Amino acid sequence: MLRVRNTEQAPEGQIELSDLVLKVEWPVPNAERPLYWRTGDFQRSLLEIGLHPVTGRLVSVTAVLLPQLEPWTTETRSLSDVEKRHVNSVPVFHLANWQGTDQFADEPNRIQARLGTDSLLIDWNDQPGTSHCIQSGRVLFGVGEDDALTAIQFVNLSAEEVASIRDMFTS
Image (tube, rainbow, N blue to C red):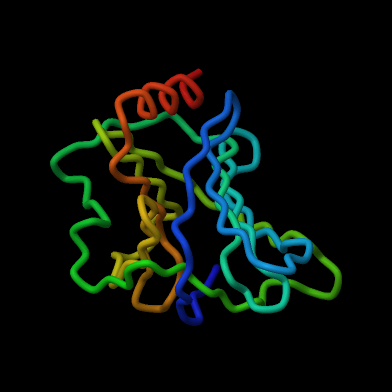
């Protein structure tokens, strides 16, 4: 589990879409080689979160592979609706998952992805509900009662971004 230790003020991360991935970066000065927490089934789904190796501050989020995109339904709970929210911040994580010189901490989970008219929600492993949210511009991070990261949502997507995401992650 990737656990949030606290939050830190940071400039907004910018969503970048390429032919293969959806990526957001939050550069840090004097950046060292990041640590990566990866989840998914590693064949049909892979989400990678980059962390500063000393502070644990979020550096990047990359959706490499997403499973079949489910439609956004009226039952889908948006992270935008979570009342307790840290704004203009990024999560800072505990680094207990990394041993020695390992750059990657892999945690297999079942990823679910829901695409709406202006939003993409990615969550994993049937985590319990979100108790609070950390927001950096158009990216929201859902955090559970146990401080575990449970979901990431990209909001206020343009019609072009939604179409690109659908094209990238639809087989």
